[in-house]
View 1 (cartoon, rainbow, N blue to C red):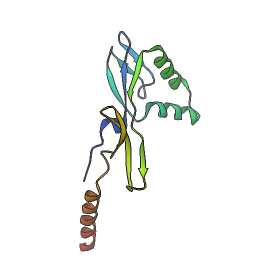
View 2: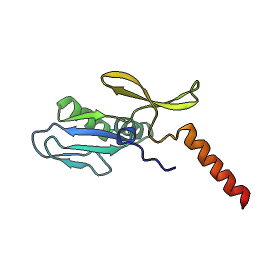
View 3: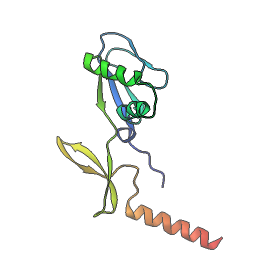
Length: 131
């Protein structure tokens, strides 16, 4: 069964706090022009991606630009992809989330339930055995 992951599981959401239109060179491969209060979703964890580019021998220019923009208050990170951790007791991945102001864990939207997994396994087993 195909499941579409939720935006908050895969994207960093940033908001421009600049008074007018501004180019943020660290967003996307060639930068993004954002208007005042414009919100965009960037694939992946922006901070980790820019940090890892530097760790792998790349230039630190984009990471430094992000840091300067955050300190200057011209951009805000509204959310990063939630970390996914494996729960050995439940034998399933769990994601950290805030629900009604309380920190807790949830099932990632792209994880099939045990019932869905066993039904797809049963179906695929039947298909391959009858071939």
